[in-house]
Amino acid sequence: MGNAITRLAAWATFGLGLLGAGAANSQSMTLTSADIKEGGTLANEQVFKGFGCTGANVSPALNWSGAPSGTKSFAVSMYDPDAPTGSGWWHWVVFNIPPATTSLPKGAGDVKKKLMPKGAIQSLTDFGADGYGGACPPAGDKPHRYQITVFAVDVDKLPDAKNDKASAALVGFDLHFHTLAKATLTGLYGR
Image (cartoon, rainbow, N blue to C red; front, side):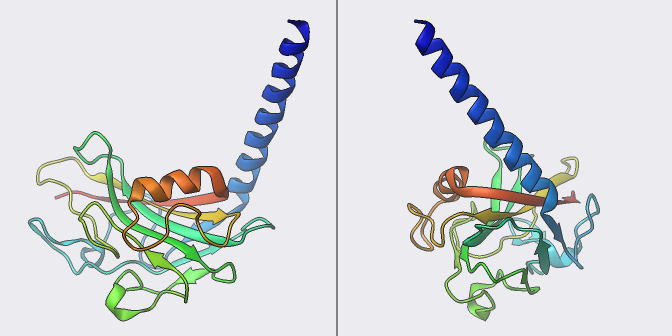
């Protein structure tokens, strides 16, 4: 029994060490946008066109830096934790972004424009389509938080999410096990 407790304590210490390393890496990684300021209101340009919203549905330009060594790809998501669904709402899911990439241009979320780096995959959002789907909270709700996150990933291709039909949950599952660091930028929008 004593050996089992000692091994458990060693594994717990090892696990806490990994959490600490991840937290340190996440603090060194940054995400910025010329189109969205941290805590600021999203422009109509980033708002969805449909579901009663009349925005331009243009994904923001993004820039990131500070990825840890060992980064083999990046992923980007935009998530609304305030959506009245019980599970939030995924507005943008991109993965397998090549490791030399440190930015995405404005409008890269439009799959028809082909502005993503070669090899990057934009998969299904909760709107049921691939590519960017802008902010569109229910009318009368308090402003929702739209969290854009860039993930530094330890594999060049996610193992389970294979193509543009992958759900946000499946991509999130892969990212849970393969994220080295991440940085988040949050914009607000209500109507």
